[in-house]
Length: 265
Image (cartoon, rainbow, N blue to C red; front, side, top):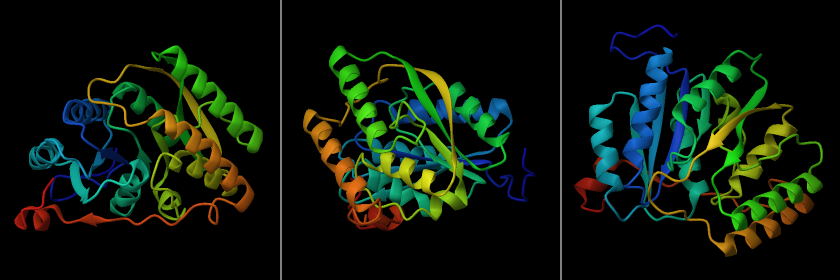
């Protein structure tokens, strides 16, 4: 456990970026579960809660969490452009030795996130640690789509040893994540991370977990998203992970400035 500083907060062991887009039903549950699990394990967790252009009560919930929990820092994206942009916005704010991303849906138990971090932290540091959702409470259609998508990715990049490309959290040394030059503003960010981690020589460390149904809220992945995945993966393979993806535009604003201007959403 890291040494506490004079302000009562130590250097974080792990910074977790949580993009929240209209997640009023699950955001607080997910954040509190993570905080409790990491405190119980004796780790210093930093949560970068990104209001990803929400139009519901998510901004107010994150504001209250930041005021009540010293481990929570929030920022925001003015206009939602996808899951990836929320992650890109949070990456520069990470201060932990390790940094990672996790959705706000609460599908992976907080205790499993701690287990994943422990596995990463006990390694030599040259890893991308991620979950493999081996047991998933999905419908038949989503399971078929997931299997097809992962097999297609494996055909394009046979040397990347993962059977669950989009499985999150994904955790790696902070300086590696911040130096990846990630660009995807949508869900293609996950395969981009995998490809660039492999190019940097990181080993893929997967931990099997049980993936629950969403604790609330609505999934923002649609059927058209699946076809877009396949097209974008082929483009990334042919042109490379940098040329095949348009640059993202981190668009965080200072929440206090936004609220002073009456533009909080």
